[in-house]
Length: 170
Image 1: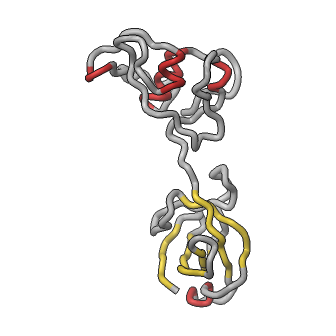
Image 2: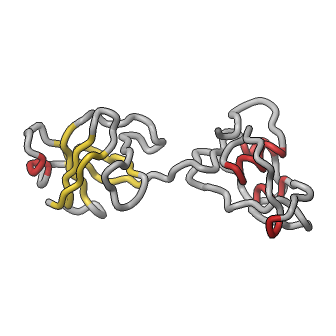
Image 3: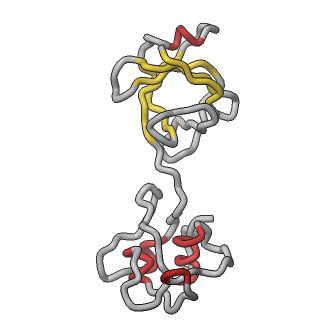
């Protein structure tokens, strides 16, 4: 669960989001070298460090989140609204469609827009989206995608949930 988008924020919640990927998770936070944590500072949360002694050790800030704190001082709690530490960074590809039942006809079609994938090598069981913010799964069907904006390189099929069920070379 991401940091709330409004209201009062807690420093403990921010540390939980950075370390446990959940603002409300009550799993015990871990300090340096697996020891019990000492102080939690806003600076350590924002800069992913342990700047002032035995603090909670933070992972790097996920800049793939739609909202994230900056690393510049002074730090502010308000920079954290809607931060999602485990947000998936999506990669855009030009996608082509075909209304022809055979998937091979998705190769060589004209562009139909950009879709977003969880990594640079779309694969079976990947969830795909038609919006860069990870919303709007596509309709079920047969499609093609281009690597680095070139011609269609692969064809794939998605189910009604927008999950890839097959991938083949063109």
